[in-house]
Image (cartoon, rainbow, N blue to C red):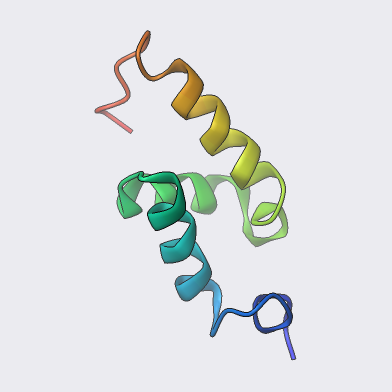
Length: 65
């Protein structure tokens, strides 16, 4: 059993889709951040980065991510 299954997801793709859905963010942006950060940060750094992104998005145009 891997970390994704241990947390109730089928696999990493299922987890990333869930993150996108839960935060209301485009899946392509989640994939981009996840790719840059690596799988080791999926449950920590990725979530922090998305929260940072969402808190700054009214100020900064992230359409190019």
